[in-house]
Image (tube, rainbow, N blue to C red; front, side, top):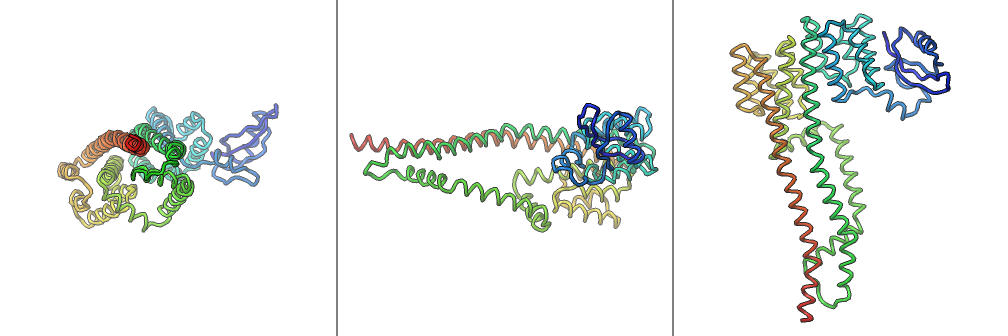
Amino acid sequence: MPAFHYIAVSNTGREQKGVIDAESEKHARQLLRERALVPISVRPARQKAAAGTSTLQMMFSHQKKLSSKELALFTRQFATLLAAGLPVEESLLAVSEQSEKPHVKAIILSVRGKVLEGHPLATALQEHPEAFTSLFCATIAAGEKTGHLDKVLLRLADYTEQQYNMRTKLRTALIYPSMIVLVAFAIVGFLLEYVVPKMIAVYSHLNQALPGLTQVLIGISDFVRSYGLYLLLIIVVAVVIFMRTMKKNEAFRERVHVFLLKLPLIGNAIKISNTARFARTLSILSAAGVSVLEAMTISAQLITSIPIKKSVQEAVHRVREGGAIHLALKQTGYFSPMSVHMIASGEASGQLESMLERVAIDQEGEIIRLIDVSLALFEPAVILLMGVIVLFIVLAVLLPIFQLNEFTG
């Protein structure tokens, strides 16, 4: 049954907005009247906003993308209901009623409407590519074909929750270093903008040359006061241009990705995170009954680094021609020797799925360790740099005083 966005007015004159499940627009209006609501606007969930709808309403009422948290919650609730024996359409209805966010409810009801029309669940999910990835849809399709949709969804739920927890942990870990950097910039900016000029003004009446360190500080302070805002504006514009170019120009994006892979810590983190994502995705798809070649093709599409993606796609081509999976992945140069050996062992023993899962677990653990080490080094480095800058400012301010004392003495 399709879903409809509605705007209605209650008996008290209060405006209400939401999503309703109905057979048609006329049926939706009838259901609203039965709720003692006067419908003002009723339109299909996937239809664009009608004329007169504000941009703000569109932003809050027509979001099509699910956040990591929303996707993880939806997958876990849906998997739990299916495992309990409820039909797909009833499970979707129950999950939609559980959701408090209009855009999430609209997406779920739209998917349920397609299922009630006779479409497979995977096809219904593919109608919302912004919300459900190719991995999600392909795994659901495989689960429907094999008759193990509930088990497949449970694995997907574990995967989405793990991805969400990892992102949450990373964001949480970055809060303290980010605050240190912001405070450091604020303190230095305050010193250069207000404190240093006032203290330097004390020396302006002296008829003697100021120390070189002090002259450098005066030059920096004058530059910040004169051109600081322009410099900040240039940086903001440069960042915006860079982000837009990264989004639209694939050749430029590839060059940036190649450069990032050459950086010591960042390059290693990119390699590990992408190979872990590939292994985890390949494991889930293999467990769902997807053929190896199709699973590798889908997994390669989820790799974010262009050089790694192209290398893995070449590996898929070699496997299609009859090559072994572990040898094809080894030739990319991005998979660790341990990962290659474990995949080779899985191929030989017929337990490729479990070995891929172990590779993913090992690589994901390595990512967490790398993040912890990087943050442990970053925090004292920022504090040390801040100390050096403050020391430079203090020395530049005090050196003329020492000179003056020697001169008068």
